[in-house]
Length: 88
Image 1 (cartoon, rainbow, N blue to C red):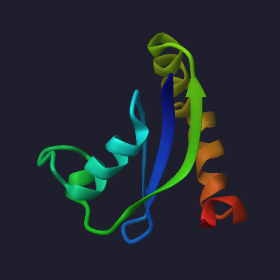
Image 2 (image 1 turned 90 degrees about the vertical axis):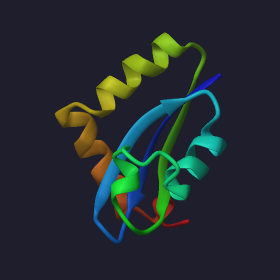
Image 3 (image 1 turned 45 degrees about the vertical axis):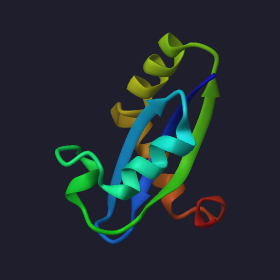
Image 4 (image 1 turned 30 degrees about the vertical axis):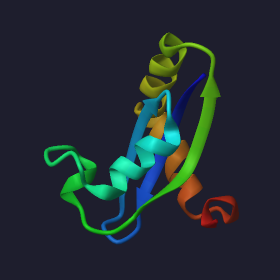
């Protein structure tokens, strides 16, 4: 299984959309700032999950990631920031 996800950094009001085979490990990497030149390591504060979707193949995950990064996809993700479900 592959995961497409969106994480949000409230301190900097930033969203990151990505895909991974191991979401839990990837979220730890985002928050540890281990990758010095990555987008998420540039910002202080914690990255929190606001959306996650499970897909069967990497090809499907990459296609869905691309959809979420589109204009309409970003509108969808931004709406989740203030939804009660995202406030976990």
